[in-house]
Image 1 (tube, rainbow, N blue to C red):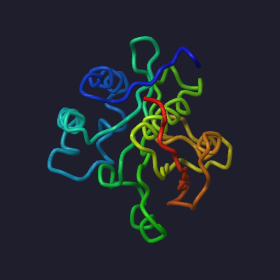
Image 2 (cartoon, one colour; image 1 turned 90 degrees about the vertical axis):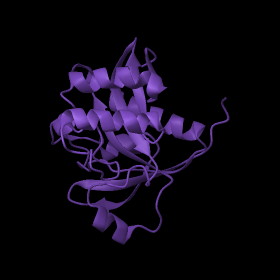
Image 3 (cartoon, helix red, strand yellow; image 1 turned 45 degrees about the vertical axis):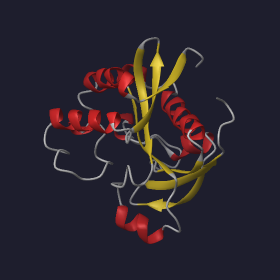
Image 4 (cartoon, rainbow, N blue to C red; image 1 turned 135 degrees about the vertical axis):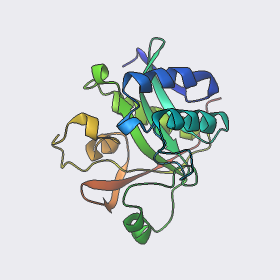
Length: 195
């Protein structure tokens, strides 16, 4: 995997992110990965509106992700952020009823470009998000992957946040179920000592 590298989603990498999203038809239902952000008038109106919203959030520094690059091309990504940045998680009511505390960060969406699937890039993207969180000071991180019992039952395009097994391989531990077929995985991330 040494040929792949990670860059943070930022104003200077937004065009690379946009190209990845456009090659993948706007991600899930042209959401541009805005679904998990706070509800607002712009969200969910049109693909163009979602794109503009995501770009504004990136420029305002309130949208974070690890982009995985193959050469100069972004081919995968993992969205992460604080619960304030990403409050709109699936099964939220159940989640809040069973939460002892909110995490410092959430990983809410992982996407790998179709032609690059099956190469472990979802794990590379998750690892990249964890590294960027460590550089930002670390903290308790949650992810909400699909709990498939170790069996790939679904088409990978529906696994919008990877699988429990992948999270376990990346050092996360199972916390509790969330909805039908998903779960809460947690990991304490130490601050990075790298500059």
